[in-house]
Length: 409
Image (cartoon, rainbow, N blue to C red):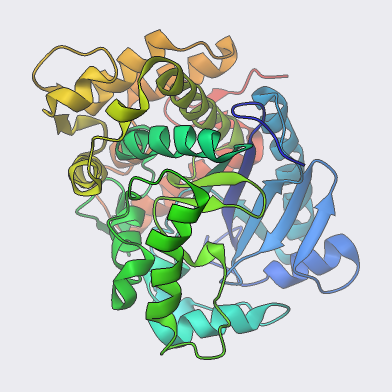
């Protein structure tokens, strides 16, 4: 079924499975799925939300089974499934933990690749790229899928997504710590993601997708060159599919959607869904108020520069590209990405309960900022204390710093 532009959204959330007491990663996603369905499987359809495996066995992905319209209802559905998963995990003395990177995981020693159904894809990735590193086995993200019904809607959506991607780390960075050390980026997940497939550079390109005007052009400029470049490493074509493209947003023509992949996972699904709702409505604003020619005049390298600075400094990064700032009605010569987000929030309309969560981020800072304030001095003891609080936020639908109970009932 084809959905028109901005009619629905599909969302995917990834979480770590950790030991409830030690918070070390636990590679038992296959047992979680087995206990849910009654047999070993890679997917479990649980009504509105489905569960599935990922590359590594300590990670579980939750996703909307079908596109949905109501963002608040999506959040509530995710919350219900997280509670159900934690109940199953309790028999293993485990729990789900949020955050886009585990703060002390050593991927070289602790990575366990998925060994069951569909494993040949993951093992081929490992053969080519060596997946026992942070860019592969220690990254958890939120993916937002938005539909289009024809080439024109695809072009509109793709062009708007390109210009919003650079701002995302200022809203949702949640990975400030790497192996019990303060990372050099606010969004260290993206730091590692940017480099995880450099062996075949066409797979990720400049992270920001090229200007594309049609499905035909998308395959000619992006997909076919990737297939050509990976062929010597994968003569059996195990990795052949649209999903092989790893740019910050990728087209999924099999379901007529574009998937945004640059968002870090937050402390609970209400915050993730608030961010997705913000992105959804910002894109809607851009499509309605900015011409295609204006959206498409920015090169990938131009936008990548803003993105990298934002990934490094989060909401404190500066933007001085006047043409870019004008997209959002900003006339100042230089502003922070936080100020851009604040301006955007005044231009869009989203449910008031989700607006309050976005204001929490804009006042208190990204989750990375709030984590670092709580950790203060980075060491194992302090990280353990902070991430225990984060794990409780996910279990209890509460928010991190200030530690407030979710009121969405």
